[in-house]
Image 1: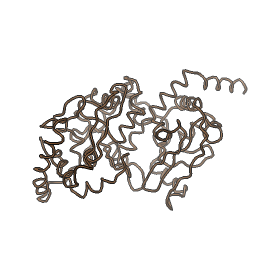
Image 2 (image 1 turned 135 degrees about the horizontal axis):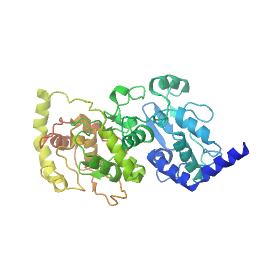
Image 3 (image 1 turned 90 degrees about the vertical axis):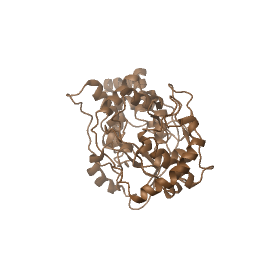
Image 4 (image 1 turned 30 degrees about the vertical axis):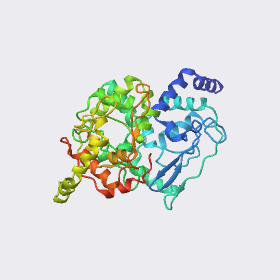
Length: 402
C-alpha cells in the first residue's frame, strides 16, 4: 500500500504530467469559469447568470481548506465522470460534467496534478442564489436522467486517429454542445438539435451552427478557415467576438496545430442538419426591408464601408467580409445587432497579437438607425437575411457585454 501511494504521488509531481494537465485544463477552458477576471487563478467566485438564478463557481485551487487540496485523484475523477462532488453532492449542470464524463482517467489525473501544482488561493466558496424550486438539488436527479449519460469517450474504429482526437476534444473537454446546441426550458440540450446553434441565455449572444449545412453551418468552410478562426480568432471567413472570443483567448489559442486541425476535421463531418429556417418573406417583411434599407445604406457608406468595403467584401485579414457571411444572415439577428451597438475586438492571440477592433455605435446611432444598417447588411449583396425591428435593437441595448 505504501509503495502505491509513493508511486501515485511521484506521478502527480512529475513535471511532464503537470505540463500535460495544464494543456488539458486549457482545452477544457477551466480558467474562464473558475477565475474572476483580473482575479487569482482558479480561486472561483465568478458569477454565472442563468434563467434560474445566479451560480458562483467554486475554488479549484490547491488550497486545502477552500479549494481541492485535500481531494484525491480518484475523487476528482469521480466529480468529472459523474457530476458529483467529493461529498456526493450533485453539481449543477453549469459545470459541463455531461461532457467532461468523456474525459479519460489518465487525462483527469493530469488535470488534477496540474491544479494541485497551482498556488493555493484561500477563498471560501460563495453560496448559489437560485430561485425556488431550482435551489432544490433533488430536482437534479430528473435532469440527469434526461441529459446525463456517464461514460468515457469510446473511439470510433471506422474513423481516423485525427478524427477521433477531434471528437474527443469537441465532445469532451471542449464541451462545445453547451453553447452550440439550443438550451431548452429545463436547461438541457436536445440531442436532436446537436450543434445546430442556439441563443445563449442571459448573455444574449447567438452561438452559430457547427453542422455541415452550407447555408447556416460550416458546410463551405475549409479546414484552414476553421482552424484559423479557432486558434487566432480571425480567418478569411470572419472573426470571433463575444463569449467565443473569451474561449479563443483562454483556451483554443494554446492548443497545438495538430489538435486544432483535428477539431476542424471532426466539425467538418457533422451532419448537415437544417437548423432554424428563415420565415417566408411576408408583405410586412418586404415593406420593412424597403423602408429601412435606404437609410441603412446611407449609414453603411458613411460608417462601415471604410473598413468592410463598399460591397461588403471586407479587407482581409483584419476586417471580415459581410457579404456572404453566415453569421450576418442567420435567422437570429442578435450578433450583428450587438456588434453594431457594442463593437468589440477579436481576442489578442499568439497568431494575432494586435487585433483590429470595431467601435461601438450605441451612443451615436438611434434604435431606428441601428435597425436600418443591420437590415441593409443582412439583405444587401445577395445576403438572404431578414430585416430587423427597432424593438429587437432596443431590447439588446441593455444586454450584458458577455
